[in-house]
Length: 316
Image (cartoon, rainbow, N blue to C red; front, side, top):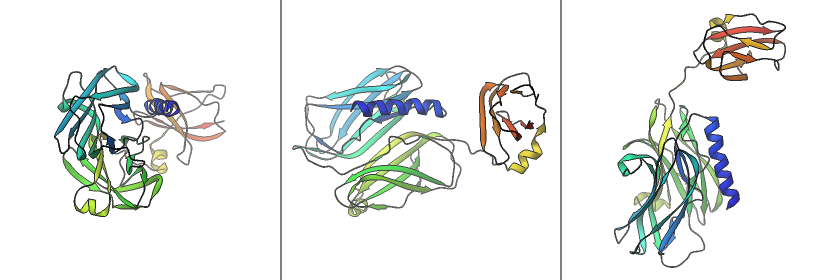
């Protein structure tokens, strides 16, 4: 367990350093879809919060119309928290329960949810079971997604018999697209599932919904679903060829006695990228108008800035 928690913390740190910041909540371990009836229920939650907020878990529904909730306040940042739900009333055995994990505004309600996960059709049971069918989005799922015509998502699964899995893409309450139903045999592993959608997607109000069950469960709309909200799609970036870069680029000279390339302009750029003639990024500098080029081999290169300025130079 300690190793897993360390892995998740490392994952959060890598995500924050590697991409545009985004908020995220997840269950540190895959959440079972069969839960033993008890006086209390413990959940270990990982989070990234860009502002102070409340971490909340609700359990509701089922044959007894059960409801129980808990929340804790968290500070801006990332970490792991344990949440415990206790209730004088116990849920009745059966299916149809909903588990909602959310990061909300401080003292807010469900309407102030910033990001969250929902598991539908959970079953509460009286006696322990040795195995429970389960499928979840990979904890490595990137919730900031670049536009493409085909999106692939990793699903971790553990099945005792053949099951079917499907992923749907929603924008708020509007269905956009679904993958094919993918048949997966008994066993444990990871499976890539693709959604084709060619329209550009922009914004933070998207949801991914994973459904799994037997074929008859899909027919009867009785699958188990796991939903991730707060998924963000980045604005499509313009594609440019190397010939166009060459034509756009202004020739600049490099001082042979210096290992520093200084670009024209009075202020720093958010980034400077050095690419070779094949379009491969060789070097990158952030928040500067200078970049060290001592590691470059002799040859021709291009420098591209965050303000879409293009330069070409030769390293002697």
